[in-house]
Length: 153
Image 1 (cartoon, rainbow, N blue to C red):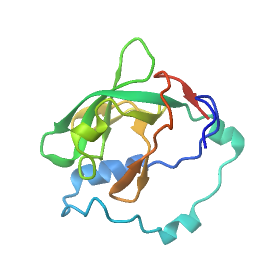
Image 2 (spheres, rainbow, N blue to C red; image 1 turned 180 degrees about the vertical axis):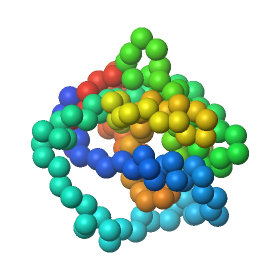
Image 3 (spheres, rainbow, N blue to C red; image 1 turned 60 degrees about the horizontal axis):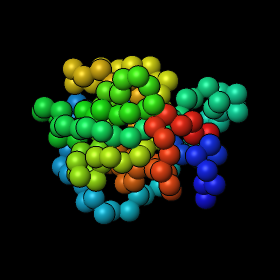
Image 4 (cartoon, one colour; image 1 turned 45 degrees about the vertical axis):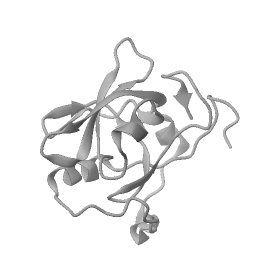
């Protein structure tokens, strides 16, 4: 359980390469309520040191606007407040599992120092963390309100 907004949080996110591949792949929608099935490939993932992990800038973000990405059924272009002077634009493969109503005003965990990537012609400046494989099944969220930009560790 999270004791406050500046406490340890363990979470895993989708790989950027997988997100880019998903943007170009067309698949039939999956049942949104389907349980996440463990991926046997996870056992082959290498470990990272605490020093490597500490290089990630995980921040509380608030989704303040979102729209569908044209010709990409699974992607949203989102405007996310991460506590900076201007909100960031992020592209996330969440449309297959979440409606705009579920995401708008949601507090999420954002990888804020991820290298920008252009996905379907839109520059994405971070990543929203979610659980699941190709289809996300849950967002990494907070158990209480925190200010956008609060550090997650």
